[in-house]
Length: 192
Figure 1 (cartoon, rainbow, N blue to C red):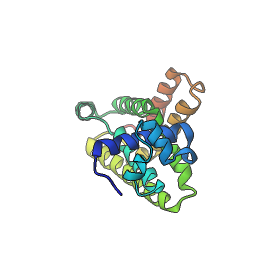
Figure 2 (tube, one colour):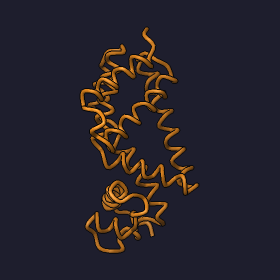
Figure 3 (cartoon, rainbow, N blue to C red):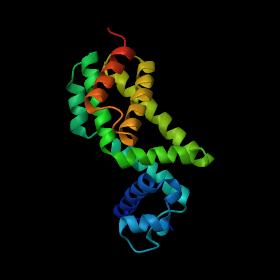
């Protein structure tokens, strides 16, 4: 158990993300992952000790794929340090996350499944808490206006905006979404 072909493992985890987004957590089976990844039946079961292992690795892979690339980070480091720049960074963030639709929907499925699986809840809680802490640390090091509470409030507000965009995309137009991101930054982040 636990094969070492890292490319195959990544392809299987990516296939699991697609299955989670399309069929939900109940539809995530080794067979469904094998089919999605176009590999022989039984392949996924050779790479993952259990369905819980697959669920956990799918969640970790989503976070991995949502990380900005080095060029984006360099551009952010070189940007201004005002609310206008902050709003632009948040619009970019919402766009990046929303563009990985299946990943975000898979995370939503994992969160729902975590309400029924204490071990998954523990893993996801640790991962999300680490993500919050990393976002706060990045924010504090960046010199952007606002404090840790502003970062948390923006995360909460923008996460729900992303949910609306991915699940009910016609609730707000693209222009309305961009305006809402700007308004959230302006209202949550105190002017300096």
